[in-house]
Length: 198
Image (cartoon, rainbow, N blue to C red; front, side, top):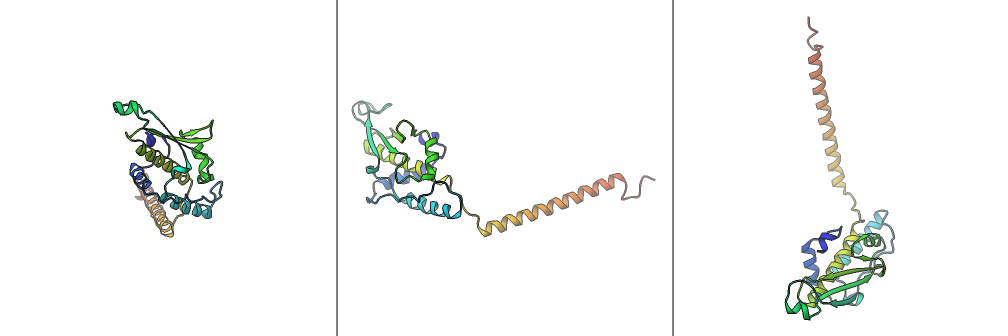
């Protein structure tokens, strides 16, 4: 459900990896993002990229979010009717660990609740409460990471610049040859090459 709604679509493989790592969280706090409102240049991009790399390796601890539970809907028999397995995670959009440059994208996401200025993520995939909590935290992690990474631009390497220049030169040469060939065909049609119709 999450990856079909949200504009920045994290892959299923990444969500599984994050879920797997949630149980092995060592209690470390999340990295504090640099105090940059808008990413404008290579230095900003480098700092943001460094933060994203650190954030990708960490997991959101349960202590940084508000958890709530309710009865799930759908198949599941008595388990669904009796046990509060649906997990809901709420987090303020201006939390210290969410980068300033990502907040504009997060406000536009379907998970943003404007009345409380928070992000709301739910999960009913699993029959157990703990697995749904892990799923919610993984979704929130992917949401913040994709919103933050969307505005980070990569610098073009020298190798890529040279390769593009080579492609441009080859394209110009092909265009020049095609133009010369078309010109020769037109001259031949007009009879200038043979000296006229006489």
